[in-house]
Image 1: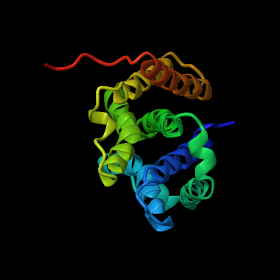
Image 2: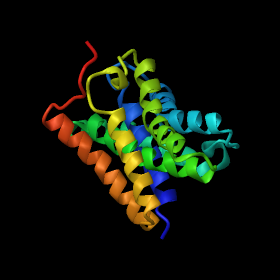
Image 3: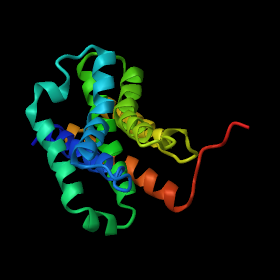
Image 4: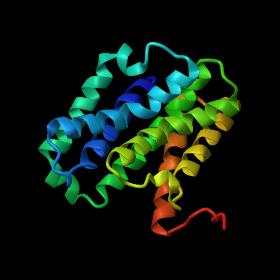
Length: 200
């Protein structure tokens, strides 16, 4: 079974939840939560496709992505208490989102014939730019500019995917391994408060 398509839908779903929950304390209605969830879910992939000249954009060419966004927003709107009781819910959904979108962004870039170095950057863009737009819309400092290991985890996972792909590892296994590594890096970095050296 090809895992790419279901993983894309899952990534879209969890990023929509992340975006919708980001406005939970700002008195936004369903439309406001929906808009933030929508931008969070499609922002990185849209930027990637525009930069690579890939049209139609994924969410325009496939209605199922809009359905995934709608379900994510509704889940955040209907079950906010349950979701927010989960420990570090925002962190969980954001971590899942960036992991899925990193490797899927690399896949998309490679399918369009770009060099592996560019594919790694496109994977990182796909993962982090939706969150950057979300944080900007909610008047937060984007996590990309904090000391947390975030974009670097995505870039590490993208490079790992390219290496395993070069050595011929079966695609679905590669997707799962690379996604797991990104998630693990984020979890370990947050738990032990690890960060990259600062530029002083």
